[in-house]
Image 1 (cartoon, helix red, strand yellow):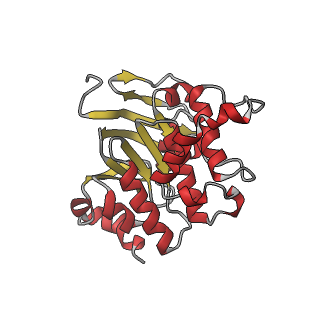
Image 2 (tube, rainbow, N blue to C red):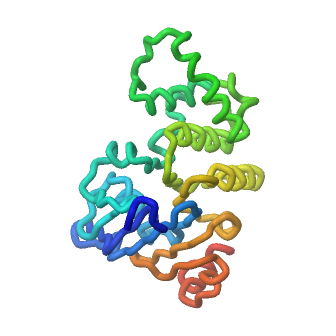
Length: 253
């Protein structure tokens, strides 16, 4: 597979054991370039462990991971991020007492490799303001630029996390339950936001909200007890009797 191949990320036989417990069991994933791919499944299905393996926060027990045709199984989290695989929490808004604009500016500094030069003059940092404002505009936060982050409503904080993720210029965005804990209005806003920012990049997300998954996902992989139970578009997967038994029935309860 070449770097411009159909699949941006592939796993083969990806497995993770914890003292005899198999959390991820021989998972083959193929993430198509330029799509939104959802990873779903009941609690304990192995979704988060899978994410941790892809970003190398965990080392696989067996199997391989390739990105743009290159085997990245042995790489460290920082190497993975430099390749353009960015997970939302890696650069979330961790400075609650900075303004929304300042948080995005810090993320832009990280991209430049000078994230800890906090002693730089305001004038030097102001050069990043126009790009930071562009990113805030993209996630409908331009009106909150001067707001101290701790004062943001919860849904808007998640939008800020996506803005800081975008500041790292990801080719593949990994979103871990982007709508968790949100009310309907925020869910709708963030769902629309994901669809917007997905243009021109690839998104892999873990998500429990089935209306979100059905509305924006091109492909869905269903995990159960660490193994792939089914895969395909929502219309196909949602009618699979095994999936309905294992997951869908409880999802709508």
